[in-house]
Length: 264
Image (cartoon, rainbow, N blue to C red):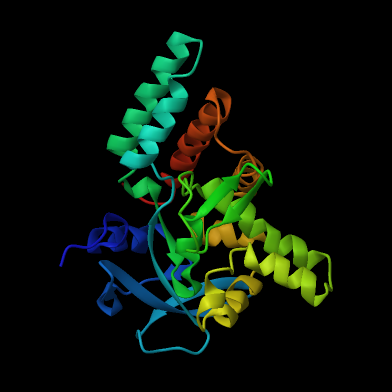
């Protein structure tokens, strides 16, 4: 069976080297929908979250993980970004961005530096790929497979981190009423999990982390400074040359940080 690039056997061997606090045993991986998936127990040791791979039938206090191409520069995204780059009045800058986009699509999109592990429990990986900017509301929304799919679902990791941050933001505010909770959940990283039986699992998993920064450090290998940059940039839709350039710079900074995690 041919598996997706970000979750094939070679990528899992990379994850095994890159993730120091996620203990991986590739013999325990199992196939699902063209992906290799692993089940991991969630453990808190000295106030730090550590994950350890277990048999796939294990359920209690466990989460399923698989790979994800974090910054998505596939053909569709490339074509959309190229159109934005071509609108620049600065021909030299436009050409530079187009060359960068071609490099990101052909070289970096499918690279170890661009691959991370994400929970598939609660469809958290699908949430990342279904966030879009709604002009009418001037806010990012999560598409829930109802109606025509928006074309600008860019699968952006910075916007995903921005949406993740809302969970810890609302936690810090303390109590909220049922209506407020419902409005939050329907447009949150939990929106897809509400359709199945995994809401409590993904909620407990995220809740085990003290902060967004702690979660991002474990799952993506990035420090507080880069988490802050991605969260802030994730609030901004990519609609012009400046927002595109900022996004490309962020991708490059992320890849440079990932190179420190393991030998490529």
